[in-house]
Length: 278
Image (cartoon, rainbow, N blue to C red; front, side, top):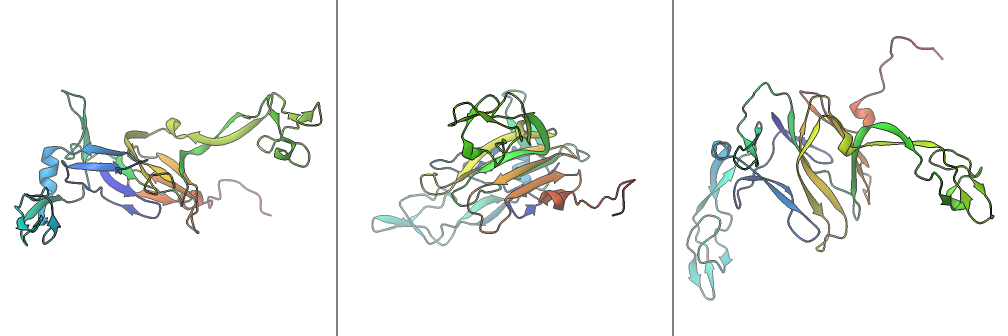
């Protein structure tokens, strides 16, 4: 499978691999109001992506006698240790192609080297953030008809339009006491297909990222997915976006992973077989 990482503005044709505490794909982040899920990477794939790099702790003061990242002993300096200007650590290049294996012994999901180059599915890490102090809502890209959620309920008059109609389904509501209005047990409305109902999308792991130290200034889900050719989904972004798009659609056509608004993904330019000139 091809691998992709998706944000609100970019599609990167690879997925980053973290090295600590073991090779894995980080989904989300650690901390209060957050959730980090480590999706493990198989040993053979990790070895094929491994390379060495200078330890980023070189020259820094630390309380660790031995650097936890590269294993280099520190030089005593007062009440701390100074990392010498040496030490190499293993880092991993991003994965561009891979397969997902369910182990026979424990049933653990594992990212491994690609087993079937003809597999046209895509492995996608989606990290589309919310706006400031906002959240995200994931859904399908198809609208479905459902009963109006206000059926049979009493509603406030200011929630209706000027003709006493429900703004969701257009059903006329009536009052029996002049204070509240009763919504008849009828009316339908449309909503986006639930994300759990989206065909061709399998969630492998789900984490969360958040804003603020306590994680209460906004949050959004991060998901690692397998997408079948033709699969698509929608992420609605709430909060202060400062001009950034409030809707992102991700569509995998079996060759290219598309990111954009609805009309960018599916331009309304098909003339069709028939029509009327106006």
